[in-house]
Length: 218
Image (cartoon, rainbow, N blue to C red; front, side):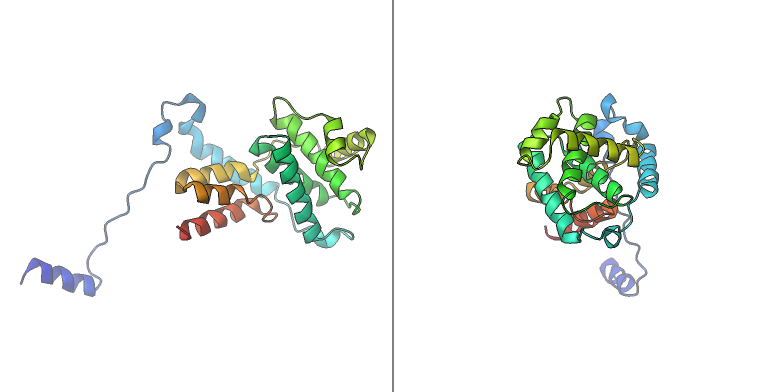
């Protein structure tokens, strides 16, 4: 009996062993890069996952009498435009949305205040993430002077007080960078993945889903 036939019978009966998939070490290329701290990457992301679960925002929309999911989406679309206008880092945008959601989860805001919450959150995120952050008057102008300098500063203090100045949180960006590194997307997929900061409140799982969908569309 030929080996080909034997192998065919084994395969048909499910007796042949499938070759194990080789696991690619996506950090191998960064071993000599001190800034990548590749030897600690597993510990770092384990901490990120734990911290994300502790700071996860519940679905707060039902507790907001004047704010809907659509209004939140419109706000975030506008904040993305502001982010591009000011040429800010990606981390700043994701931290901005994190601040907005965490604040609205604990504090009721009126429809008129929603945009004020957004620009104040971006002001805070810019100060945290950027080397050269936009000034208060820049946000006053970008909102077409809907709010005054004093109103922005007051909201900034109010947000920081409600969040107890806790800004060192793992935003979706840190997970997205990891997913992208593992999935090796092409330029179109990369654009798709980076354009998903407003998909919902549970960002980590949402971005993983987007990564998997983009892989299916290859």
